[in-house]
Amino acid sequence: MSILIKPIITEKATANSELNNCYSFQVNTKANKVEIKKAVEAAYGVSVEKVRTINVRPDRKTRHTKTGIQNGKTNAVKKAIVQLAEGESIDLYTNM
Image 1 (cartoon, rainbow, N blue to C red):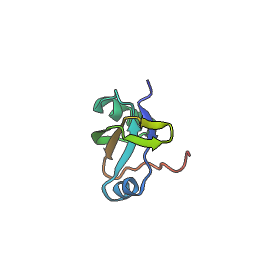
Image 2: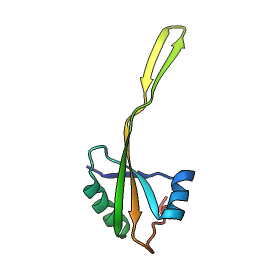
Image 3: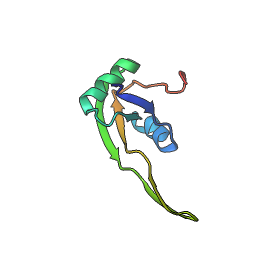
């Protein structure tokens, strides 16, 4: 089971990393905060102070077409916001 799926690189996440030293990741939906902390520390070689998690519900969409009503939804994801110790950082752009 891979815990870290991918880093989240948006304007809001980038601003949060520059101001508060917090980095956002998309993680496995079954992972808990302790597992996420160990995975980030092992993958990037940093010390983690705090982990906050968010379960994002799936978006449901309905389209009216010639053949009838079509229903669909996106996948549910879990996000983790990881705060690092003072003076440490992660360079997410080097290994893309």
